[in-house]
Image (cartoon, rainbow, N blue to C red; front, side, top):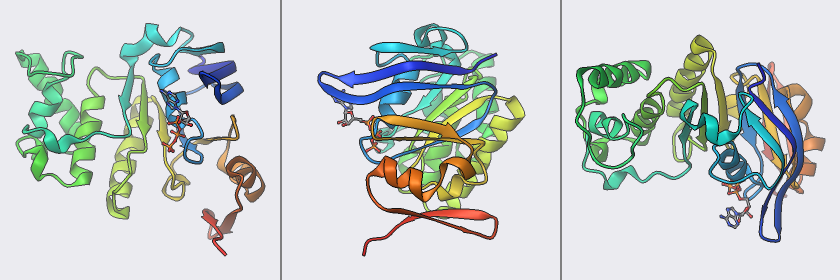
Length: 252
Ligand SMILES: Nc1ncnc2c1ncn2[C@@H]1O[C@H](COP(=O)(O)OP(=O)(O)OP(=O)(O)O)[C@@H](O)[C@H]1O
């Protein structure tokens, strides 16, 4: 079954055209990295998949349906989440959305507690269950957010720049967890980042967004100096070495 299909999709805010004529499909569960300059439309595209932003022109189908019809099957970790203001433990934070609601602590049945334990185990975070969010590091909070996203066993997970302010060790840990879950459950992951390098060996395909358009393809086909320089409108170098490639800029 086709997972995601866009046909001549256009995203626009008033007169500001963000993306136009997007046509591509994802036909099997994959890990897809989303890459592109600031303001290119990565978040807007993700919000359109979620049905938060309307499709203005063209079509976008997810699991063959309109985004709003499959909302419960898609988990979303937005770009900015200030968890410091919450006087909650990891478990309480996850519990606050166990019934799909985001605010307030619901009464939890035994099966809800089991579900919370399950998602904590999924991200190897049982030790964080009783720790206050205020005491957690960025990487620990990211694991709690991921656990919350796994409630209800989503078929599609969208993560908008989850690695902001994380050091390379935590990026590696979180990325390995996500990749493991994606492969084991055969679900789809769309993850945006400004640093593509940690994803090079993890993603199946990359979606490069820029210049009001997007290209989906294998890393070796899409991550080239020519393509990225065009999408960024700025010189980008791609250095290939030791079976990997590094995306970099020249500031000279
Ligand atoms: N609700 C909105 N109303 C008007 N313009 C918007 C709105 N949301 C986003 N935009 C504009 O649409 C463009 C794309 O924004 P978007 O946040 O999708 O980009 P992005 O690729 O995610 O950027 P970044 O990498 O900086 O997070 C930007 O020019 C932004 O100013």
